[in-house]
Image 1 (cartoon, rainbow, N blue to C red):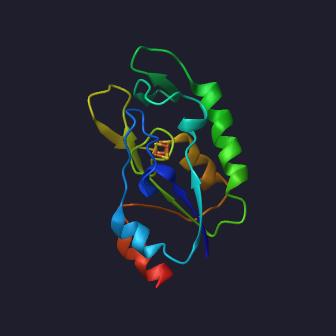
Image 2 (image 1 turned 30 degrees about the vertical axis):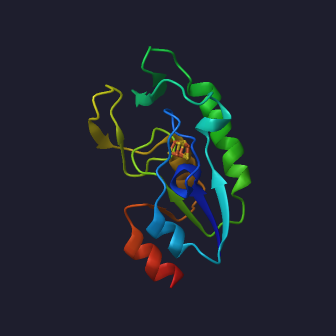
Length: 143
Ligand code: SF4
């Protein structure tokens, strides 16, 4: 199966603080499949960079600068990269990759319902989306 995965879940140091969210269990489940790693934020920002969150529909950094336009363009480019993928596995809560819940834009780690920009694009384009919190379903689908 051809699967798109948030690069930070695969261990790439692409998060705003230069770290990753490598998920060993997920990586084991993905063994033998064709993986397309995507990270919209790494296409826009240097690493490390200020944290960003979605506030009232706009992508803002913690200094109050608006990055909506640039990040939206990067997400569109990522969407083109994942053409043909049967499954998209995204990092939860991210303003780009978050699916179902994201931070609220206050930078106080408050969670609200919503999708990151890339996740919303994937949903609009009818991709099946799961997160690292859906390992049982991923196991069932790939098993
Ligand atoms: S959650 Fe998405 S945008 Fe953020 S670091 Fe991971 S892959 Fe990149």
